[in-house]
Image (cartoon, rainbow, N blue to C red):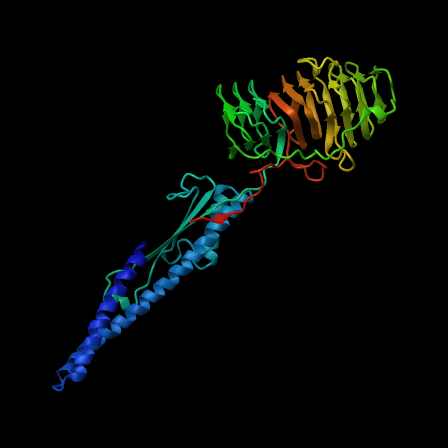
Length: 449
């Protein structure tokens, strides 16, 4: 109970008891024929007036307390909402105090004291970094109550709000339902973008593996469990386990059938000099020579067997291009084994179409046998769109880095990072579909205390 409430209760009890005595005295006075009671009444009249005034004062204090409590509730909610919108701690604190001031309770005015805490200083939410607490105190004025009190009581109220959260759209999703390490980060791998959530659909107790100096600063959502070791950490705000699987946002995209396709080129297309090609079906695969530049005109490129790029070569395909690896074709020399993928200082500039069948998909690997799709040894991935291989393994290692200025996703049966996952997450107007699973949706700011 607050100091004001305690004081008010004592005063009201006193008034009730005194009123009973006064009523009893009035009845005796009326029955008294000697006139003594009227003299007594004259003496008691100032006291009776004082009791009435005291009751008025207590009522005034209670009304103001309710007004201050309402303002504190709004101030806590306002501070939390401001923080949710991206305000700094100092800015959210200022917003909370401004809300109190707009209600007529400015900090420092009329001895009003407003304190904004994040997290809450006491209570259930004192360890919750999303909690915002507003504590307000204000001395009350003495009117008639000065007859009985030497100093005025002070109203003190408290309110706590918990900041909601925006949706946690993912940049990485592994679809395997049972594998250990279905999503793996190891060998100094980092996820530095806290707006690039990692979703793992495996029910294994070690579905998400973070080891050997791994650090994931984004939110993580795992159907099974997380395994963290070797000086590694999950430092995001949310790391949920035991939740439902995240839906595949591209599950409705039709699987291309190579059987009915007519080959644009039957043999391996060797790019021996910098050149531009048009969409088609490349049944023998494509191989870009070392140091050469391949430009792809907008459209869809169906490739069988392999898509390979020699050392220091470049792919320019930024007009709205999707590369579809048919059957069990893979990136690299066609063997589909470790360290034989796309490697050695190549640059990939690839932007997915924003409309059409493959909207938002930059690379679609059709394999179903866990084909290895690998980027290795200083590959610059300037990719806007999804790398999508629902039946394959994506592997990134030895400084194969995404541009953090572009919206990129990696969705595979399994996903393995042995370097930093630096993809950006600003996906507005790109055709890229959101990865959002259970627990990753937005929540509202709410008052809790």
